[in-house]
Image (cartoon, rainbow, N blue to C red):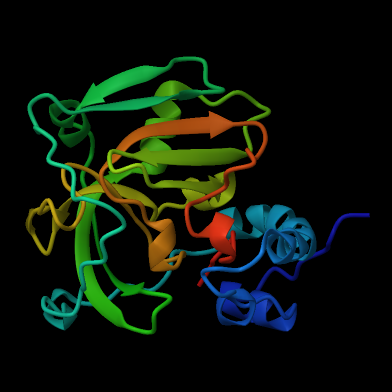
Amino acid sequence: MGLILPRHISRRQLLIGAGLSGAGLLLNGCGTSLGVRQVRQVTEPLNQAIKALLLSQSPVPEFPVSAIEPDKLLINSFNTTPQLDPEQFRLGVGGEVNQPMQLSLADIQALPLTEMVIRHVCVEGWAAIVQWGGVQLQTLAKLVQPKPGARYVYFTSADGYYESWDLASSLHPQTLMVYQKNGQPLSVDNGAPLRLASPIKLGYKQSKWVTQISFENDLRPEQGYWVDRGYEWFAGL
């Protein structure tokens, strides 16, 4: 029997009620592989059941432009900052889809622009209210037409970073591939030409310098750079 979820319950309430909040499950960055496997065995059933809930819920409340905190978004570096030529940049969108595509930045910017002012929350304990502008990931999904078996979305970055999301979170209306920050073109340090942004995930899930999006039927052994080092896979807010 599947997990039955109430219709009116917040993401945070659901995760905390199950004893699976982001803070409760975060492990040391040098956690053992045994610990990682144990966490995944506990969380994966809830991860799967929560997808339908995410799709059915209203958008996360946003902030007015006046609430933007321009100096609070810190720059966390995973590796050397890649220098990508915006004119030569291509975003590959493929995997288990009917119409794989290679999109230039101009192609992406020609799609409907969505802007949102949200709180970006880092697992390290800081947060910042930021305005992001870009294209909904669900818009890209409509273009490539994921096959019925696709349940996960992988994001590959130019610096070698990698992440995976459940399909429902990826298709949430506030999950964007962004090229603007606070009304200005996205800076290289913040992930230009294109990064992932959403109010429903912790910061380490929001990959910068994304060059490839792949819809997949199953999770690979490599589920995310920090996830593979013990951090929570779902990482929802």
